[in-house]
Length: 422
Image 1 (cartoon, one colour):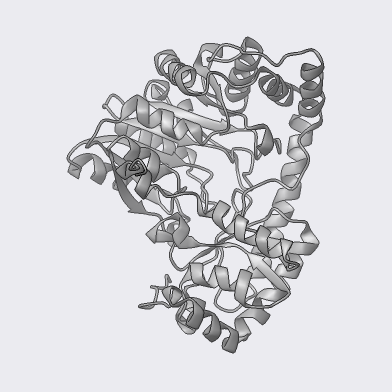
Image 2 (image 1 turned 90 degrees about the vertical axis):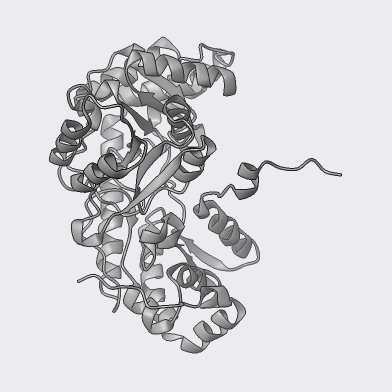
């Protein structure tokens, strides 16, 4: 008899982008031409100083254990970076490195949540938030973001959460926002900080897209007075420096919280590799010009994709403000075709054509509030983005293929029409 998995393990959900990625790779291996717009990975090379420093570190045998709290050179570089770029009053003691930003969701929850605690999560949301909250026996309290409000969290919703939840404890903020591209403004963050300051409320501020701001500039809640004592901000090198495979990120908070997270890293990961941290420090200190040039290339992609999608009847995207995702409302199309938005995404990949497909994600992969939307990543060359844009109207016109796809996959039939925003 096999050992029984825990209830948590049996109900664990995963990031859908990687599931669709696996399908896309299988189809490509079988000979299908697929434009991959499902995964949030950079198509560009890691920055030059990161690569050369990583190679040098390997040659110098910098490949052994290091302190769980990180090597001093990395902590100092990261503290200087967030202080100079975002006005966060950080020193080296406030920095904890880890394998990307995602792991800090778990460590934040372990640091602050007890069973029964309420956690405000704005929806659509990054899919791994909920499992990390539920791992602690806490409750995710979902609040919708709307296209009509530019996908910005409303302070009144936070106030309602604090006043009505049985045990409010934490808030998850994500700005720039995945999947919508929305941005929480400096005024929003000031108002949120004023509302929670001095209360027993912790904030996880997820900031991987801090350099992908196409209007204005990025702001962090940690720059607001007193928020270092109530918040953990998470950053990654995957987007800004195209270092996704290096698995490097870091968290920022006050010394007590950072020390606690350092202990969690010690008991789970041991440490983040020295050579990776040294490469990251070099990127922060030397590669800002290369980073900024790459961000301009990303912006060009987002504009191309947004303008192209908005020419398709039934598609509506906001003007690009941040991230390398485009999140069009496709509710009218789904309603006309009788298909869910994720069903539409999979049809574009698998069913619309035998030889060509486009991989994207249905908005419901990011929670119920994402239903009726699609998320497109811009992680392909511009000519491939153009191919995808030219294919979409053709795919939508093939009503016989759509009917055949729904016959094979009845779970994607739309039970009732999606609401459409004005």
